[in-house]
Length: 97
Image 1 (tube, rainbow, N blue to C red):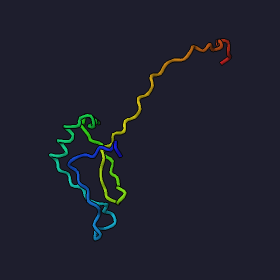
Image 2: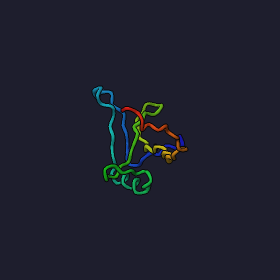
Image 3: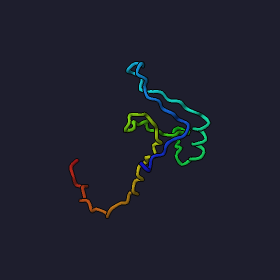
Image 4: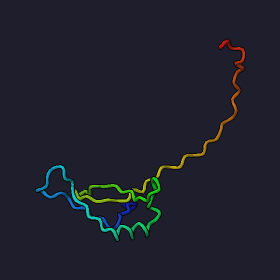
């Protein structure tokens, strides 16, 4: 896909045949490369509870290999709420309750 942003500094390895079923694969993080990627792409870095984050999705390629892409999804901005025309409500002052 053309819109996929692949982070630098992450390498995934599929599970080896002799590993138990609960192992999905391995991940190697090269910190300097990942930090440089985040610094070069500040628009991809989000903030949560005053901490910087890089959101990733872990995917499987058509060949079955694991990889990560930056999760660039952002919620659509809500349209500003506008009040509609005023509605005349009936006078209810004479109701017994």
